[in-house]
Length: 173
Image (tube, rainbow, N blue to C red; front, side, top):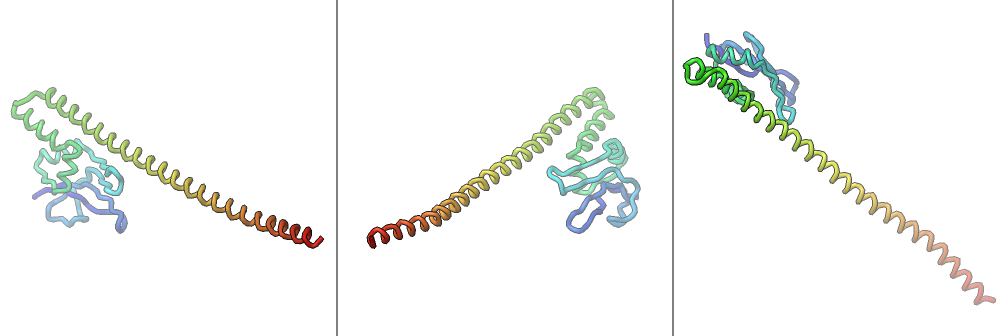
């Protein structure tokens, strides 16, 4: 029986969420599966991935073949690197402590990159909000100035009529 790690779609139309599942290769995409090992939500930025790393590693070490998208997710979460290091430990090329140190170093760098991206997206969003607010303030000031000019012209017109009436009265006298 060929076992695959793949995505099973759920969610509504145009707002998909995927389950990361281990399934028989002959089973349909959204059909029967052996085990659910995580979820993937591409609708958030950055995409949110909840994965049971230990289960995923166990299945990959036992020979489950990930699909292209599942392979990218496993690589992103470090499962494939962990497998690579574990194979090296099993062959005697490196010690378990060295493998754990390499993985933890990689994980720290990866987490800092992810948090840096989230922070940059947040700061970009705040900058855009400040720019929109400044533009709106500028437009509101222009509107207020136009209204003030219009009101000033309306007030000057009655004053001009009174002045012309006074001039007419003085000339009549």
